[in-house]
Length: 325
Image 1 (tube, rainbow, N blue to C red):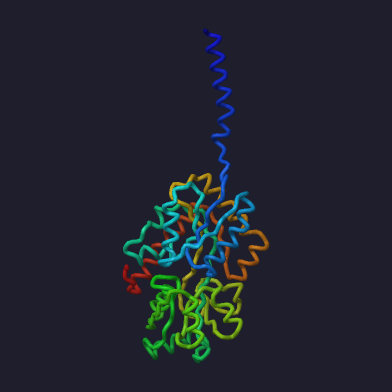
Image 2: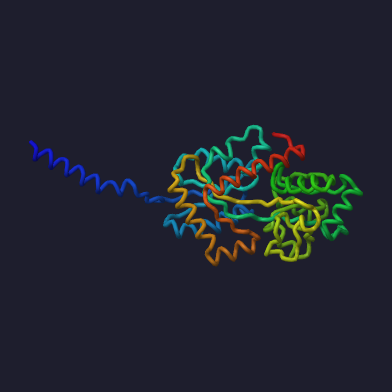
């Protein structure tokens, strides 16, 4: 009886020793990952999503399928990941509009940008660029401010919707300079750009990858970038703060989020793959041409930055009188 019990005990211990590493080891991922871009194809978010996913999937050993789920300024696609409940197999490339400004814009936002996601890593920040139609005899930020003050409400600017980065970049500019301009919301950058190029819209604070081709063609005049530092993609264009608007900073950041409750070790695996991908020469060069300043931080660091951004943009939205809708 004693011998049988001893044999059973030894067998159990041996079996446990064999099973323990398998239980402790997380072979994640073992199947394809869904990467949601919550905006239309061809935009900044979509472009970044596909470029990063292409490199990250090589490191993870599993395909990453990039799916566009646009609508409601990126909140529809973001909400789909907030409720995914798949422990890291769905991620979204969030940004300032979806994960910092949204709670100040939407009264019935279907998610809490902090509680309903697991932060993976910030990808980087991208400037918006203040551009004007060359038909306007305005060649600097100072000239723009002087003209706007002399003609209050006459100048107009577009955005892709209330509370988007284009809108809040302009709202911050108005708040810090005391000028008043007319906001004209559009459903997307493409129709807005048509009107800007035609002169029906005077100026815009739009994403760098959207405006650079038109700057290079001479059909738009850049006056300043919205980040605290100049962009390598437009080294001769001053920052708006440098051009005289003290304290101006309207950086647009992008970052990867998984569903809430994703295991920390899986977040680390995703973070490491994305951070490594961002350093590959081909991707680094492409991001530089898009004006992206890479910031591959840890989940904890990203969460801290996100919290401060939610507070900061809430103050801008309140000062601009943007109402929840």
